[in-house]
Image (cartoon, rainbow, N blue to C red):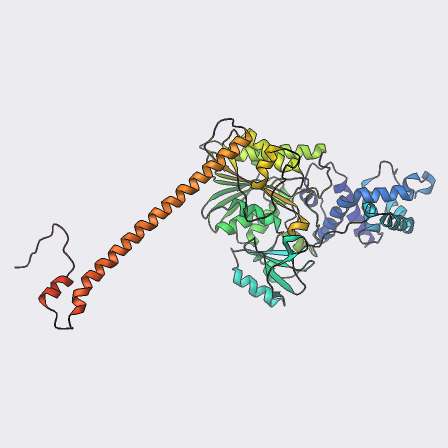
Length: 538
């Protein structure tokens, strides 16, 4: 037990103390952690990332960093600057399991001072809200129906068999788009088709439908990407950053047929993607592809010349992951779409966030370079403006007016930042993009934007490009409605004329008794001969 505990501490310290070159999901998969310990490692890493500043402030106030070298256990490294292992052990002792297990000198140090550290933390909490511990939000557990394997009715029947009762969707304390799911019930999401909300903390370990890929554990906000892309049946789609595959397979389920090329650079995550595709019956639609999407050919005669829809959901800061879920098993860990982010460990103005945003812009612009692409959807699990609205604005400037920012999921009420600081461009963009937050939407923080190709006014400024794009879209919709009305009227006149002709032929014959039709009635009942025909009777 102590050996496993120390292994988790070492791995968590390695991940949380890294330079953040990889997303947290990549680091977890690359850590070499035994599969049975992955759920615990995930919870530990996320908890440390969210509470690091509070833990270090508590240790500073307790005098931990003022200890003389003689007061430290033998072999203990210097505490300034604080080693990553120290933060991990502090989290376990004060906020995590509340137990101090392991074999290292730092574990021994925290074990000795645990009582004092707990008293310091309690005193800090009593001094006011600024020092209070903010508990992790308890959000519903969401299940998406995999329409490649199961219908909505079958999913409801399965949930009923688990002893859950279907209840109408009820708004939670966060507002009309938040959800309250009472114990022993489930509800269909009112805005996300094929998604069910279960009570917080519901364990689905060992559930057959989940194991068979019929039901998918997927966060509510994670479903918005595929819904915003809305690829039609038979479409050619690219997912630029695919693993673990929930969004990829959601696209496949919405399409029913077609082709999704799913790019993944990391070999371990690519193996996970391939396994999930097989589990969810996506082999006929999804093609996992090893490699970097930025190296994909964008020429007019290249492999991807026919691609019409692209999903860009890249690595990000993870600042929206307000509700770190704790899966109860390795299989459940693999099923949950842990957003590929840093779990909020990065500051919004940090160099790391700037580097991530630049990489995100390159991915979106490379997707727009595909010759036949009509729709590009960009999403992140970040709440930082630099990775969201600012990326959108920079992309619109850089694309030369070839794409517009189209309304994204209009029925979703939570829109973008409104530019209260007087930013006119931001005010223009805000109504067209979607955001999600734990309090308002009962899901992790998220951002989605939808770009659509337009006839390009070359190098148009972003606001003009948006306005032109909206005008083009309105004109297209108006023309489409006019054509539909015209076709409907034409079809109605044709149907009415045919019915009138049939009634005219039938009326004289119907007026005469059976067997006593006059020769005039019989002649009237006959269908007129085609023009140009001749009577061949003799």
